[in-house]
Image (tube, rainbow, N blue to C red):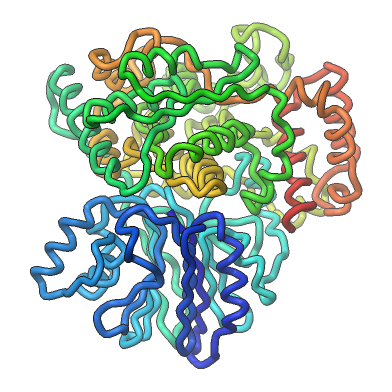
Length: 629
């Protein structure tokens, strides 16, 4: 893994400030502590921080073609680079290294913008072609690697792996985007392509952007989407066998490295599957890492140990006390914009543990999105059984009324906490799913936000993010549709962002075989009933793994990777929460109803109501303002 940065003058005339480029590059030192490089020519400057994984002796960046007219700065791994190298050599290209980076410059020369269609892996890169006076940037299909950019008022276009590098540029306008504030408090993160700043954007997954000297910056071009095209039918046994075969191959190509390699092992299905398939393809014991928690409600170590024992892995376990809240300010510095997934804390710790022993770790991320493994998928489809047959003209007023007046029984068993379910059934399918995944509901955001912010939003709601994807979705099946929404929003915006920042903070490369795009394409085309069968999520995935993993791992209730923030806010962090959320810094933004902030704190800490999600998001927003903005 690496960090990339660049400055491009759209007029092609201005010289690039080498000291500024160096400063921007060095903010990402943690992403690539092994080497750093800078290239500057008329109107263009590239920077790179390298974490050496393949071809350790060469492959330094920025890297050039034979005559120096094409240069690349690149972050990622292209797993099919050897076969592409042979294809390019057969076409007459000459290679000076044995690394995947050089494949990119020659692929650009050979196929132009279509080069990304050839790449299999995770990547974010920029190519400058001096002869064509063209800058080309691209991001991998699922958004595993990040890429930020901004068009500045002085005519420069800047880009980087992390937002912190753009912050260094003195011409970047750091005004907060009110739409991003709405998105953050809706989702708990800010979905692509928006960032917290009006002027900065994320290049969406599966997109490229081509810039030419003297021309305006165009909109990004999408080159890939999750197809959801039906695959050839077969028996359950045949499909299970094919699933394992495809995943084995995705794992195998991610085990190539010239540095120590291992895997995360949480004790859940996805990471356990990856470890099982790694062990079958490795002559040496697999290095595995787990985090355990002092609180048994959050502890999966016994299940991780079952898998470690079965495959005789070289297993390492660290116990983290649940009260690991000293990372709060560290997290805001990692993510550079408000980010409210509290599982970032254990993720940071497991990456810290892994780095002590390996430089590359395989993870099980993507299993829930591929195979409908979240509880919310099951609940959504149960709601669909009520929502589908009932006409909207009847359903909306009846369930809307129930949702409005049924009491919010946070303390009651789930069966009796029907208020949210009634509210969801009253809505259309995708807006109901938006209601389910919202960090803070529409109703509570309306009370949280000030009149000033509401005027700036001018009617904008985060549901428009889902609307935009529903319009282009390649499927209308209710389960496939919400999986598609997850893959476009939650997966890149939350899960992959969390893993990238936590791992790169420790100069650790994480590879995600379950998100191999060929595997994702095939899985997307499976019959939805094979993913969620009755109340059993990941049905076909679990069936295919029965030969490899114990039932105690496959068929136990999903636990997750959480931390006890509700308790923290009433006890250990009681004073910190009150000081931060009722601080002048937060109140002076003008974004919030200050009286409602005080009510949130008081009601939660008194035990009257459960507001831990809202309080955590506010706490991280205040930490962002204090440490980053």
